[in-house]
Length: 404
Image 1 (cartoon, one colour):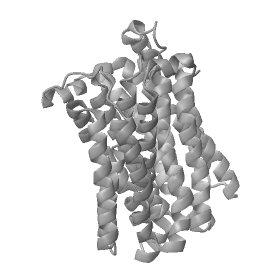
Image 2: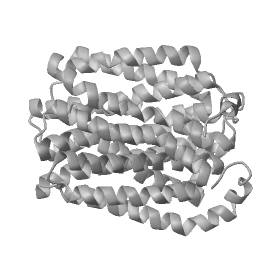
Image 3: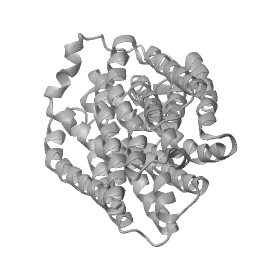
C-alpha cells in the first residue's frame, strides 16, 4: 500500500514532523483522563465531575480546531502549528508554577490542553497539501496516527504521578513537547500549493453544503468515540473493576494503541476498497463492541478485548473519513479539517460526560455506552442513504484518482 511512488509524491520530513507534533499534542490533550484517578482522589470529585473534567479538554479542543483551521488557511499550517505548540508549553509550565489546587483550576488547565487538541486542524492540512488525491488516505492516515500519543499518556502519566505527584507531571510533559517543537521547527515546510486566503465569511460558506454536515456527523461518531473513550477508560477500569490507576492506565493504553495504529490501516483500506464501504464496516464493528461492553463483562480482560476491537474499528473509521474529505473539499481542506475535527471533539465531549452522568445517575456506565452505540448505527444508516449521491456526483469526478 506504501511504495516508492508515495515517498516521491510528497515531502517525508514534513509528514513525519506533522505526525510527531500531532502525537505529542494528543499525549497532553488527554492528560487529565490519564491522571483522572489521582486528581479525583485528591479533590474528592463525584462521578459526574470526573466525567466533566476529562470532557472539558475535548470540548475546548473541538472549539479551537475551528479557530486553528481558519488560522491554517490564513497564515499557513507551519506557522499556525508553531503558535499552538508554544501556547500549550507555556500554559503547562504556568500551571505547574502557580499550582493547581481546586476543581476550577483543573478545568482551566483542561482549556489550555484543548489548544493541544486543536493540533488536528494543523497537522492534517500540513501533510495533506503535499500529496495528490490517490495518496490522501495513506498520508492522512500516517499523520493522523499521531493520536497514538494518547497511548503515552495512559502508559506513563499514572506511574509518574505515583512517583512525583500529578501536578509535577504537568511540567514533565513539556519535555517531549519541546522536542516535538524543535523537530517541527526544522523539518516542517508548507506545501507550494497553498490555497489563496479567503475573506473570513467565506470560510463558513462550506456550511451551506450538505456534504460538510455529513462529514462532521460521521467524524463526530468515529473520532468522538475514540477520544471520548481515551479520556474515560482509566476511570472506567478503576471504578468498574477496581484496578489501580497504573494498571487501569495500562489497560487504557492497550485500547488506545489499537485505535491509533489502525487509523492508517483504515485510510489505506479506504484507498483500496473505497471510503464509504470501509466506513460502513467500521460503524457496525464499533456499535457491536460498545453494546457488548455496556453489558458489563465479568472479567476486565474480556472488557479489554472487546474495547480493543471497538477502538480499532473507530480508529479505522477515522482514517476512512479523511480519505473522503480531501476528495470533496480539497480547496477548503484547512477549514473543513477544523470543522470536522470540531465535531469529532464534540462527540468525544458527549461520550465522556455521558459516561460520568450515567454512572452517577444509575450506578452503571451502561446507558452511556448504549447511547453511543446507537449513534454509530444512525451514522451507518445515514451513510447508506447518501452514498449513491456521492458516487454519482463528486465521487465520479475523482474515480480515476481515488475510490469513494
